[in-house]
Length: 244
View 1 (cartoon, rainbow, N blue to C red):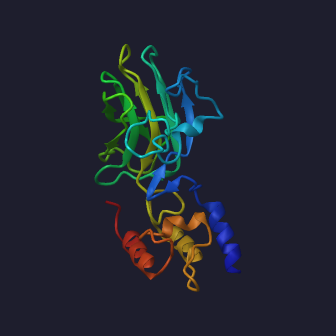
View 2 (cartoon, one colour):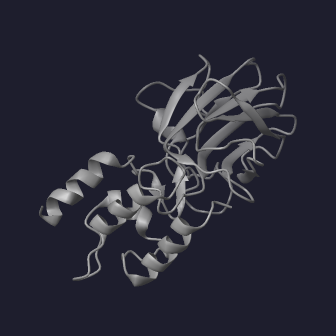
């Protein structure tokens, strides 16, 4: 079989990696949310603006950590002071591994009395609380990180954000949700095994080292844009040892 045909098969069998950017696995889809989820200017989120919460952080255009400068954009979503019981459910197609250390990061800003609960799930049915997000300084972006802490024995695909505090100065707006990348896990089952070996082999190009498509990005362990011997050595370490 020609290599090009093998590559096509890999692409079809691999989770969509459109949100695998800068070494992080950003949320792929907004599955559900309450009626009053909106951006800071008060425009309600809808099916055409769900991208506000997807992909890497993008509201702080000038990069100074403050989201309300003239060049910045209101591509955030959350709740204002008068809303109650608000929630958002996000989905990752290529799941987030539960490994040692922090597994998930959230970029946001909020009022001083804001509070939200964050839960995660492997199946979208049973959730486990992984932490809480507290108040801050309005307009000033910050990153909160969370450790799954061994709660899950396989990939996390769902994260649920639930508003806890309501009333004055409890508004909270979110820019991005990103998790760890499970390098080498081409089929998204949070286990690097022989099936992934076949995909790694199909993606490997020994002629010029260039990856044939985005489906092969999970094999680029060292992040240099090529699949080469260095990546094979790191892949071998992963396939022969248990996940940390």
